[in-house]
Image 1 (cartoon, rainbow, N blue to C red):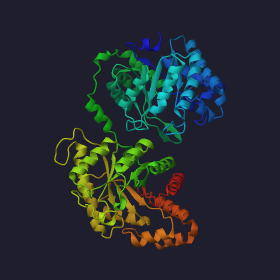
Image 2 (cartoon, rainbow, N blue to C red):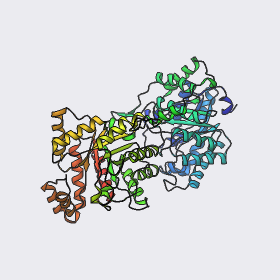
Image 3 (cartoon, rainbow, N blue to C red):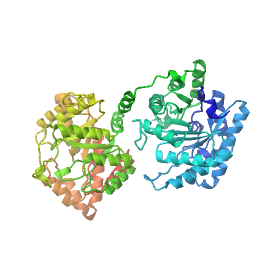
Image 4 (tube, rainbow, N blue to C red):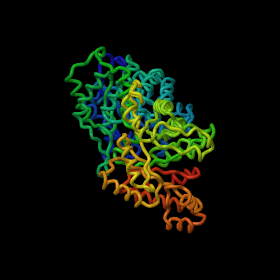
Amino acid sequence: MNLIEQLEGNTLLADGAMGTMLHSRGISFEKCFDELNLTNPGAVAAIHREYIEAGAQLILANTFGANRFKLSQHGLDQKIIEINQAGVKLARRVATDSSKDVLIAGDIGPLGVRIAPFGRVKPEQARRAFAEQIEVLCESGADLIVIETMSDLYEIQEAIKAAKIVCSLPLIASVTFTRDDRTLLGDDPMKVARTLNESGADVIGVNCSGGPAQLLRILKQMHQIVPNEKFWVKPNAGWPEQVGGRIMYPADPDYFGDYALSFREAGASIVGGCCGTTPQHIAAMRKALDTAPQINPSHITMLPAEEISEAAQEQPTQFAQKLADGKFVISVEMDPPRGLSTHKVIAGASLLTEAGADIINVADSPMARMRMSAWAVCDVVQRRVNIETMLHFPTRGRNLLRVQGDLLAAHALGIRNVFVIMGDPTAVGDYPEAMDNYDLVPSGLIKLIKQGFNEGVDHSGTSIGQPTNFFVGAALNFCAPEPEQEIKNLRRKIRAGADFFLTQPIYRPEDGSGFLSAYEKKHGKLGKPVLVGILPLVSLKHANFLNHEVPGISIPDKIIQRMEGAGEHAAEEGVRIAVELIEQIKPWAHGVYIMPQFNRFDLIAEIIDKVKEQR
């Protein structure tokens, strides 16, 4: 009986993590786990045996990374056939010795390279690499093929195409999601399920990601879109944490046992575990499945489409989650282009992302100059570069109708982080005669978003169908000429519902700590995350201009002297000054808001590198 026949009316139990178990035996994550099929087959066989004894009916061969691209990183690309053959035969031998009816899956993971259009590897190259590995796994005696832990729909579709070309075995295609219930490229569970189904997968899967709670939520969304298909679910044992130099997972075996039943009731045909799970987790799932009656699939209660959509939107943004987790966040500002081309924006955002920026802030008509719409740039960056963005949203020049329409448009594009500001007066820009009116001040717009849109109603109280999920920031000036008035403005923004604050650039750490101390004496601790503005200096002329001509910026004499003394190396000195400032504000700030000058994204990447080194 093959896999598909076994799944009719049954829920199969798959194994748990291989990498976690190998690492627990002292094998470094730097080691090529797939090579162990040849160099330490005993360790691999022992893990297979433990999972079978725990009750697994399906085990994955140790071939997850045995493709040409990943093996070449270890100088093993000439051993593709040997490693994959050994992986299947090793699993088969253990299953045979157990005298139990166990299915053997040839395991296929990501290639470890970016596929076009987001990388340099062409689709046909990816397809050949997948086909090369899958063909060996089929010829070695695998019962089925599992393509798992994929985050790119372009890549998994090439893997499915390759499998269809070189073999006729049953095929499971499984995707992993980030904390916001989307793939790394921003695809939601409904789109993933539809794409995998249309691509010809026999079983649609979700694995890795977070813990069981998240994957149950995602499974329900997938099942709603293709209710007649079969599903595979293998969650991590929760989100990993580093404790004493070790990676720990919080979800215990009993918790997994409870969720095994929930997965089955939600339509899963195959359940198991991914990172952090052990034979104990699988044994608990086996016990739960054996002691509870099988649910008739026709009795499954599905969420209405509206509830599914809302459930997906209720998740916090990655930026919000990082702040909540206490991470020191690095945001970088970028200006929209003056014309149609977004190539430079994409190149700059890619560089910053690779350097380790957490979020890209997209300014809206800075200095009141005509530029591409900021929310269009946010959309392009999120789709093309795969980094979350923050939309600068000025109230100036927008009436109530346009404010609300633009907010809905931004939300529809997947933009959730919004920075509310007044905006620069048109008198300073390219079109001084342009309309400069506004219906809302920043605190009013914050209130409209947090107490209106996020509650599901517009400014007039009319329903907008479903609530938005905006995470809203506001401006803060540590060096305001009237500190008391700035504190009053800050209080208004907090009462309106501001979630976080971005500040004007500072060059003296004491300006920030002093302002926050003054606020605390009057009103208690601020209680909201503050990202401090950092504007790297690139030359003495630049420093003098900011110091003498830009309101709200004051640069100490000692910094001016350092820039003067640096001569032709002033830009490098500016980097050092910025890094020093960041280190000095870390005790009281929640992150930084870096503003590149003259599109010197290379300097910002250098600053990020140095800050991360010092972490």
